[in-house]
Amino acid sequence: MEYATLALDSLALDSLAVHAGRDDLADLGVHALPLDLSSTSPLPDLEHGGASYEAMATGGHPTAEGGNVYARLWNPTVARFESALATLERTAESVAFSSGMAAMTASILAVKAELGGNHVVAVRPLYGGTDHLLASGLLGVEVTYCAPDEVAASVREDTCLVVLETPANPTLELVHIRAVVTAADGRPVLVDNTFATPVLQNPALDGAALVLHSATKYLGGHGDTVGGVVACNPEWAAALRRVRAVTGALMHPLGAYLLHRGLSTLPLRVRAQQESAHKTAAWLSTHPAVVRVFYPQIPECDPLGLVGRQMRGPGAMLALQLTGGYDHAARVTSNVRLFTHAVSLGGVDSLIQHPAALTHRPVAPDARPSADIVRLSIGLEDVDDLQRDLDQALARS
Ligand code: PLP
Image 1 (tube, rainbow, N blue to C red):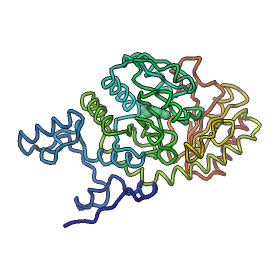
Image 2 (cartoon, rainbow, N blue to C red):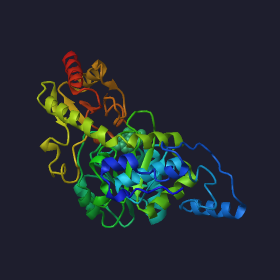
Image 3 (cartoon, rainbow, N blue to C red):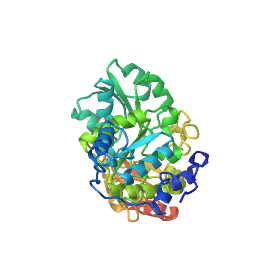
Image 4 (cartoon, rainbow, N blue to C red):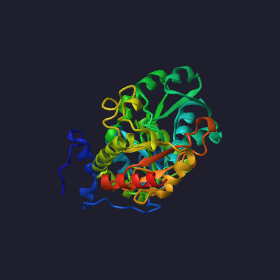
């Protein structure tokens, strides 16, 4: 039986979020996403199995005649999620990994292998784990940390990658992606798009070669999956799959299934969470216990006017500088009741955490967020309930 196919290119983001990566389902005779847990696949014969193995080990897709061979090389559930995420990020492909840090590690190994250099320019601030990975020397790269306007002066002959986050974790600095791409002068730029999600920003359209997500956050949205993904062109995707095939940092099919299902509600979740974050940031800006609110919609947090231009909205993450230093911040994190005191972000439930003591603890002291800052991830609870909870926590602290 032949089924009519859907032309995705004519669809808006909300429709793509529901339908992308599902084009083979009708032929399989199913409506919901199938979950394929096989670690290995029966081989039709040696010649075709071997040819498919060769295609995948060198970064390609399985052949129709040879099949998937082995789950470290290909898994259909993961491939469907990859296809959906690439559609939302407006790239040709994406490659999924077992965590955001595995995705970052594979990206660095892939650019080193392809371009030969071992120098990375890293625009701070970055998520503490990324900052730490780069500084650790584990991947054999030398790193120059810099501000966005210092990228041109920091790139060298042997620079193989420029890394940035926008909005940046934890204080929501915005980086002008096109300006950094120009300053990188032909070197690949990796943009960590975890905070913005493809709902609010598509860095590939601004020239980023690699768009990375900690899929653990908004993409899944329910705090029950750890994963990472890099959206990019077919050449970088092949290079990433070559690294993944030999290093083995695979996304588990159950994770891919949950993430793909999570994408269906991503636009709705992000917009609703953003609306509450916007109201909460405005309310906190006048709170006597708060010195400063970091939120991209606040004009002093967006000096280049990137919200509305580069980003379609300010997002649902914010940070607060409190009047009473570390002790004050520690008390507030202990006194919340509706917010959960926990690291991570982007889920349906609101979280609060202290970056200097937790997510950014491994960062060099001179680049670590100050100890009077807490970071909030705004979820889907009623915004008045969230504000009442923060108000009582601030009052008791
Ligand atoms: N990038 C950002 C912006 C993050 O916040 C995180 C984790 O918090 C990561 C990358 C790392 O992702 P994962 O924890 O999935 O390895």
